[in-house]
Length: 158
Length: 145
Image 1: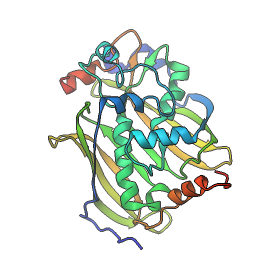
Image 2 (image 1 turned 90 degrees about the vertical axis):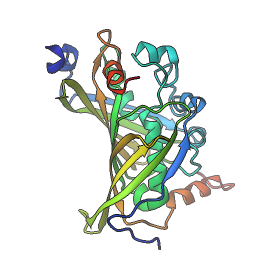
Image 3 (image 1 turned 60 degrees about the vertical axis):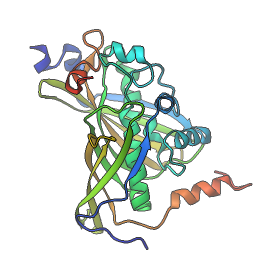
């Protein structure tokens, strides 16, 4: 049973370096979005910015990881997030995803719902995105990871 | 003052406009690639990189409007399963002017081939008419890039 959180608790943070190669690859991993301001310096300049910037969704991925680690199934099955991108992220930046519990109150289903401030900041401590998230109380369950493991087992269809 | 009223192209996009639907198979390779790129071997939602709302929007409006991502709101229900077909459908959920800038909110809902609701996501885009302004011009001024 995962420990419940209370107002004022800080989540375990997550830090990653953003590299140019990963910024470019992020634009291709599901659908190839072609050349854009996240992957091509010439497009970035045509868009009015001096160098390529990481996609906002790249920061969203880091926020997801933080929520997955801290809340498990309580986030993956029923989590909500709202983020605004407020400062550019460049190749070489080290981005840390953070969370602070602001409220624990019954949700629509009557079960406790945890509300959080969430944000990313760079190596200089400057916020690059900010917003809110919510989930049930942390769960020790990781059903989505078990489903993945089963899908890898020989003879078991995914 | 076109900026305070939104461009003609922005005005012409109807609130509630149906963006239709499209589908794709989220392969095991796509999921593995996503997890490697974001350094998270257990990432539950590779769809973060799929940008469902943007893809639906550009399919219809790429010739007239760009919507650089200023924010994102999402609700998650069931992580996608490898090699299942995902169908996304979308609409224009909101339009507004704030501090002289025109915004468009595009909502997309993703469901897999077994009828499992994957996620609902909303892109908050800064509306930039194609050919009128660089997509990030105002953002660049604000950021000083």
